[in-house]
Length: 323
Image (cartoon, rainbow, N blue to C red; front, side, top):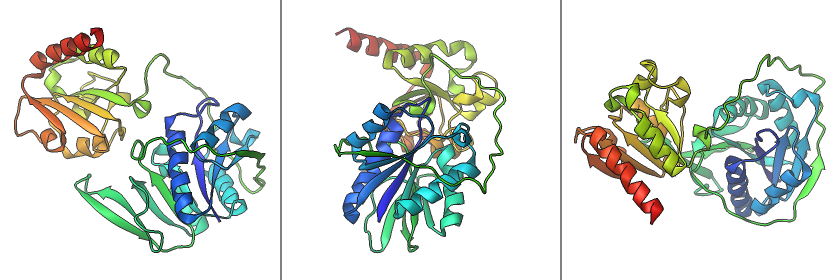
């Protein structure tokens, strides 16, 4: 018996998300008095795989063949299924991102496993296996009980954190049988954004809404983001108007994020927007309407004209950085 966690890599490198998943899996493995097995798919160097041992991985199963060069949900679900069988895993953990949300239902069907998505903490109990997640656009917490022998969990990003648990990691090559599956995903062209912090990786996000009044006023948001080492984001109306690219749209119909700090400038806080950012550890909101819904979710709020507050915000950050 073991806990299996699938970790993604980006051009052969692991990021914070991967280490958080391993940290989380290790804690569950401790609760079960078993080991943490990590599955890595793709071309990842031995030294990079060894980093997973810092966060509690006792075994790393590395899969690297031509069938895995491109992400294909059908191929990857076959690989994870076979890895779970080899590791005798009764709990499988994935990230609650686009990849995890695509793979988890397939694995649930293949393994006849109960599935809990977007969880935000360790299980409350093992017998019965009870775990929590946010529901009703984060207005309530639900306790999910999984009764199946095999259980699948997707972890909400930044909900658990990174914890070092140095382990003597064993790295082994895993060669799954993929003769019965054919990759159907074909990548014809790859265009990568460079020199810009991705929303899903950012620990701090500075976001703007219609209160910014137009794209010509976005310089302040970009300046504040640069000072804080943050990513920039926006509400849906802003991206629909073409003020900002759709890649920056956060919310239920855009990117769902959970940074350490989310700064909402001129965003009213529609329920769809809050559903995508409510996982943030700290929300700071600026809006001239004291009854704006964003203040119900904010940890700190400033009632005022964002066009006047933002320059003062920037000046305060500069003063702190210079001191």
